Amino acid sequence: MSKIAELNEVAELKLNGQVYHLPVISGSEGEKAIDISKLRDQTGYITLDTGYKNTGATKSAITFLDGENGILHYRGYAIEDLAAKSTFIEVAYLLIYGELPNVSQLESFQRELTYHTLVHEDIKKFLDGYPSTAHPMGIVSSMFSSMPSFYPESLNPHRSSEKVNLTILRCIAKMPTLIAWAYKKSVGHPYVYPDNSRDYISNFLNMMFSTPAEEYTIDPIVVEALNVLLILHADHEQNCSTSTVRIVGSSQANLYSSIAAGISALWGPLHGGANQEVIEMLELIKLDGGDTEKWIAKAKDKNDPFRLMGFGHRVYKNFDPRARIIKAACDSVLNKLGIQDPVLEIAKRLEETALSDSYFVERKLYPNVDFYSGIIYRALGIPTEMFTVMFALGRLPGWISQWKEMREQGEPIGRPRQIYVGNNIRPYPELNKR
Ligand code: SDX
Image 1: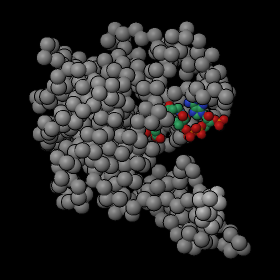
Image 2: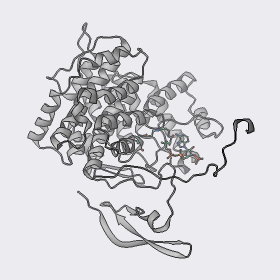
Image 3: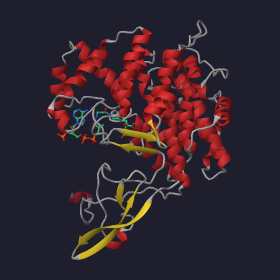
Image 4: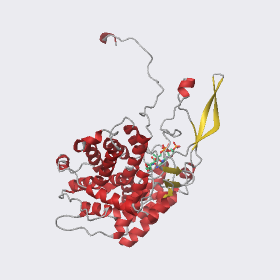
C-alpha cells in the first residue's frame, strides 16, 4: 500500500549549537514531511502546532487533497469522475477495500448490506426516551455508541477480518435506518422498516418519507442528486471528525464507538454543522431583506461574531472542488424539480460579492462543501435539522476506511504532548491562610 519514498534528503535543525538531522519523506503525490517522530528523544524538544495546521498525523493511502489546486482524489480517482460516473455504494467499497469493485463484488456488497438494514427492536425504546425536539446528530451518535450492546463481539477490534468486516457492513447498512427513525421520532410518525427490494438510497428515502397513509414516490432525480452529494462527502483525509475517529480507534475502542465520536465532532458548526448554519444564515439574510453587502461587512468586522458560514477551509485555498460540483448540481436539480428557492440567488450573490472583496481574497476564503449543499438537501425534501446527519451518512465510509487503515497499520495510541504554562510548584496553604 505504501508508496512512501524514504529519500536521502534530510532537514538540518540547529539547537544550542548542535546540528540535528531529521529525515524527510515524500508521498506518492510529492508532498514532503519532516519526520519528527524521534525529535524529543534526540533533542528534548517537542514541536507545538495548535490545531495541527502544519502537522501530519499519519501516512494514508485513502484520499489525496491538494488545497492550492482544488484537487480531491479517493484512492487515486478524481472526485469529478466519481461524482459523474459512480454510485455512493461503489465509492464506499472503493474507500474501504481500496479498489473499485467488479460486477460480482458490487452485487455481493450490495446484497450483504441488504441483510443488515434492520436494527434491534429495542432501539425503539431508546428513541422513546428522546423528546421530539432532540437533534438527530445526538440521537444517531448515541445509537452508534449503543450498538456494541447488541453486537458484543464487535467490542474486540482484533477479531478476525471477517468479524471486523461484518461490523463494517452493519455500520453502513444500519446508518440509514437509524437516521430515518430519528427523523420519524422528530415528526411523530411511525417508523418505516427497511425494504430490501430497494437500492440503498431509495430505501433510505422510503424510510424517511413514506407513511402508513401514503407511500413516498421515489424520484430518480432525487436519488441521483443524493448519490452525488453522498459521494462528495464520503471522505476528506484527516479532517476534524476523521481525526477523532482515528484517535478514538487508536485506543483500540470498537468501530461503533469510534464512529459515534466522529459524529459528535462533525456536529460542530465549524465542521459538518456548517451546512445547517448556512441555510439558517441565508434565511436570516432573506428575512433581513437580502442585503448581501451588509452581511459581508458583518463577516469582515472583527468586532462582529458573525462569520460567513460555508466559506473558508483549512486546506482549500483556491476552491473546494466539491462546492463547484454542488453549485452546478443546485441549478440542475432545482430546475428539474421545478423549484425556485430565493436563498439560492442570495447564496450566489454572497459568493460573487465575497470573491471580489479583498478581505476574502487575501485570506483565500472560498465557498466550501457546506455552502450550497443545504440548498439541494432542502430541494430534496430533507429538513434543515437533518442536514448534518446527511453529512454523517456520506462521511461514514470515509471514517470506516480511515479507522480500518489505522488498525491495519498497527498505529500506536494517539497521545499528543503539550507545553505547560501553569503555576510552578507551590506549598499547600491551610484553609484559614488562603
Ligand atoms: C468542513 O477539514 C475538512 O476537510 C473539513 C470538511 C470535510 O469535508 O471534512 O471540508 C468539512 O468542515 C468545511 C468547513 C465548514 N465550516 C464553515 O463553513 C464555518 C465557516 N468557516 C470557518 O469558520 C473557517 O474558515 C474554517 C473553520 C473552515 C477554517 O478555519 P481555519 O483554517 O482555522 O482558519 P481561521 O479561522 O484561522 O481563519 C483565517 C482568517 C481569520 O481572519 P484573520 O484572523 O486572519 O483576520 O480568515 C477568517 C478568520 O477570521 N475567516 C473568516 C471565515 N473563515 C475564516 N471570516 C469570515 N467568515 C468566514 N467563514
